[in-house]
Amino acid sequence: MEIDHLNNSKTKIIYYYSSLGLLDSMQTWSNDKLDFSIKYKYLHDRYISYLNINNNSRRESIFNTLNQVATIKDFNSKNSITMYSSFKFDQKGRIITEGRYKDYYTLTGTTAYTYNNDNSKVYDAMKTYENNELTFEFRRTKQGNSFVQTSESKYGHENVIIYNYSKNGTGYNKNYLGGKMTSYFVTKKIPD
Image (cartoon, rainbow, N blue to C red; front, side, top):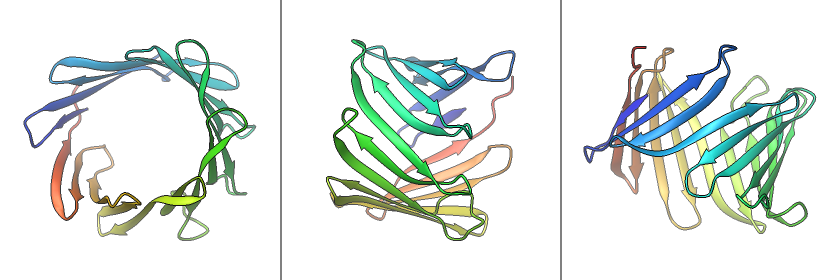
């Protein structure tokens, strides 16, 4: 996938797959310079992503019995936990809450997800709380062939993103911050 930015910079993301069709690794490049790479390892109850940037950190995503990611653990290069997240799901398997901890015991934030009806598979609203204070709110609506995502943070940032993509992944998105367009992304499929 290639992204051309308004400031003439380019981002390229390359995905590599195993013979089983699983994502093996990915690389992100900016202006022909490697920013970072991620390598994936799959086990029976989890997958591990190794981030190669500055500190060689890793993230373990652990599945529940329905093969949903129920827990995420982030570790630094010294194997110390830096973040722990747990997820709860409703009877339809949709995420409803996320709890974030700085270790296994100290809750630092939560996120609540809501759906516009019982048949929705994708959440339409999300609220994030840090130390019981609302810090971020997000809403997604469909307008014709586009999805409009609006978000607002307690720091005064208001953002609108308009997504318009076809089934093959090509399309565009427009980002607005404070009413001004800040970026316009066109996504095209790169031939093999």
